[in-house]
Image 1 (spheres, one colour):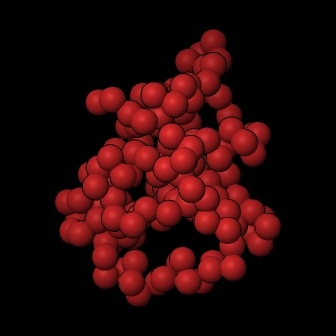
Image 2 (cartoon, rainbow, N blue to C red):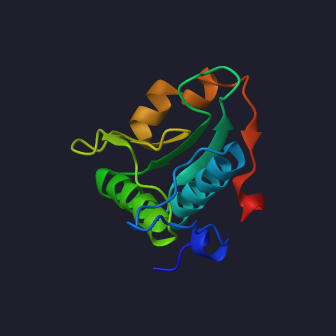
Image 3 (cartoon, one colour):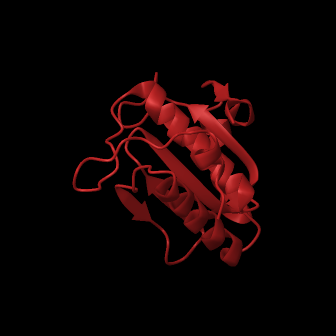
Amino acid sequence: MTSGANAAGLAGSADPAGRPPAITDGAYARRWAMAAAAAADERKGVDTVVIDVGDVLVVTDLFVITHGNNARQVRAITEGVEESLKAAGGPPPLRIEGADDRQWVLLDYGPFVVHVFDAERRDLYQLERLWGDCPLLDWRAAG
């Protein structure tokens, strides 16, 4: 699969053991979050947004939020994000929550978190409204 992350030249230098580089730099984390948003969009993620929550949260800096129209699509989006970042030399998620029920899958990369909802859960939890005072980033312009 060709990924937007590869096209953007985001591959970092892996260490000698072949592990991807750690995300420690804010700009580097932002580029990977943008790549995750593009990967979600490639897999038909709906209304994908990136929110900068770094000024109000200490546990992460960015949220990538998207949804699929059914459980199969939620799974495809989630797998697409993981595969795309890995193929581009990116980091693996530190934790994955909700993959079994595919209603709200959370991919925790540390400095950024990818939320993949089904349409019903996205409407219920309204994370964009909850974090509405935080800036939205234009992930399409980053590619």
